[in-house]
Length: 189
Image (tube, rainbow, N blue to C red; front, side, top):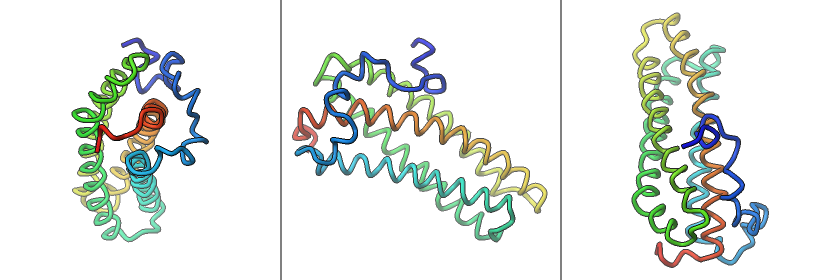
């Protein structure tokens, strides 16, 4: 894959893959007859991931600012972190094994986009692994200085992960939603 397509390097999908997005821009999605059901549900999952990330970042920043109780922070990190990783893994699994293979068949013009999204999932798997390692370091840290240090490193990781995740989600939405709006979602029922 060329460098401009790698998740960390790109600032959007290549123009050749945006052919359907040009016909179905984001601002038209919610009023389209094929929006309700699967498209709405799928986009709501993406909102859930963004909200998880935002809450994890806010909690970690609060811990660094000492405006959240250490026990409350650890509990929230354990619960939210586990839910975030579990939900994200499950979402990617369903996409890789169910949605992407079917969507790939619909329009050859954007088939290469699914290779990019699949590669993103592998890159994000590495970020998820780093997330788990860093979150566990926070949870196992002993005493305020260690908790502050591990939380600071976790904040740095969350900032990188947030950038990667958001880039992937936006690109995925701009590739897939137009396909579903144009062709309907019956094959996924």
